[in-house]
Image (cartoon, rainbow, N blue to C red):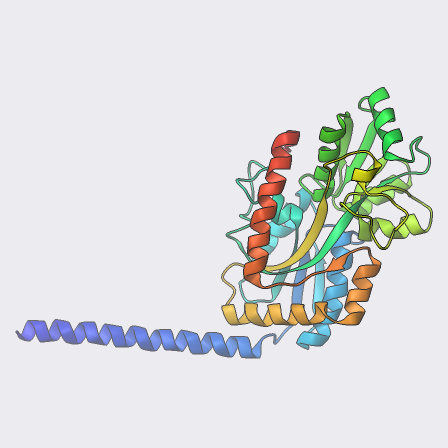
Length: 336
């Protein structure tokens, strides 16, 4: 009997200690969230400066600086279709001070069994906590003015008469820009050569210099060159025309039925970030995305602001990964 009482006292003591420890951890987490942020926050952008991901991150970062009361810094880590920056962000401390500007490429295209990359340096689902989508963006098929085509029908006719001679640039292997081109190749039944870059900005530079012929670029990084007349807008890749470029046809009405490719951008934190910190970040993002000046800046880039709960964003990513996984499979695209 004494041994029973001793064992019981030990068990009760263990339970009590665990309860105290658990309460202490909860108190610490709550205190951490209340004090957050107490230092600058970094947004990792996995593409070069000047591209759509970078442009949108800087618009949001500026607004978050005011909302959070701490500097929000954009850190460009380009390469491997966004995977270098994503891997870095995934391995960062889960404390809310490193965020990641993810895209359809980094989190949907690579999500289902690594649809495009056979060897991934991170898990796009397990290694990140989704916060909210930030913008939906049409892709814009643009050409250098020196090229002999100004419409989709002219482009298809030229590509069929000159197999392998049309080069299309992208922000990197596995990006939505890359797969927009692959989808076009598949549906239009043309042979074109993909040229990947470390972000859309350097690809656009070569497009302006006529080093490549066309590009299915995200609208924010291409629209300024269309407005200045330096690039020819052929089509938008969405089902409907863009309000920012109402005279540019959708790709379906221009002659490729069944084609639709929309890019999106969202904010993530490393997995394991405390729930109260995630909630605070989501609330801050939703608030700034609703601000008229922020919406205006994003809309002027040809993008549409969007915000949601982390659960809604996670469900959306799941649906998108299935959709783009089919595109990868049907196009036969691979980079390994």
